[in-house]
Image 1: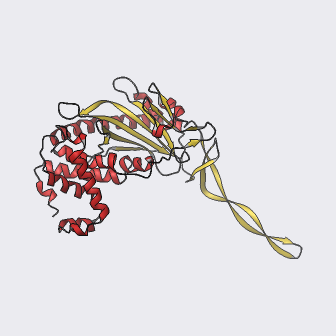
Image 2: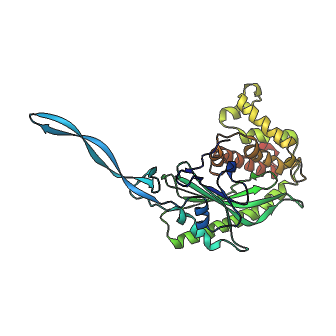
Image 3: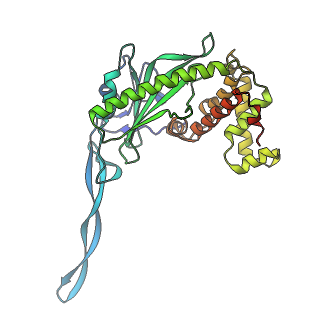
Length: 357
């Protein structure tokens, strides 16, 4: 798998750091102690400034040359639009409107420092810049675990924090549980509750601190609810054919495919879709992490078959594409959410949810 990590030609380093663990593709810096957000930004080489610069274009003016008229190039200011420029190398990161407010990398996540460290705090674990440095992210580990069953099936709790300089969005903080035994990302939004908080670039310090506590409250609530749900699912038995149906429905890309599944026209299904289903089903049946008491023949195992397929089986163009798909609202996250909803329905003794009516 490739990567889209930013390479800083001035420092000769990739813009990535991680704590204790090997960085992406063995690139970037490894540090031994958990940093503050400012230290994380520096470790990852994200301590550059971004400035708004006027945009210009070239027009033509008519000028007199004796008795003739000639055209000459003239510089025209583009109104109401600016280029966000990385000041250390003059790279244009994006074009934004006049009201766009730049939040420097060092300030983007500093409001979380108030709740970093200690028993109740979060620990910054990775940080990176993607592309030319227009998008950055930090992962932060939360205290405690989501524990399923009485053994070693535990899920670590993370926040995935992102910001951008290309005008594409606000600061986001997404609660992202990761099951340790297989590194599955068990993203799920419960009914009437999202796992993402969006924080405006224009928010003041007080509002950002309130947002930080809002994120922590959301994470704690979701953790408690998901632990109860996953433990219930680990006790619900599911037959192999039901697992396959659930996978088919969760991975179903469109109404045409659903209609073919509904009428049993499996020969007419696309080869790509059938291969995806078979790969996910094989993961469910034979992967070591699917042979635990909590997963083998259980509804929790069926859910993990879908998340595990996208995390551990499916191929991606590069690491950024994988991140985008799994934790930033892409295909993998949407399919995992569908699997979560199907499992929720099945848990309510609604086996008919798999009948494709």
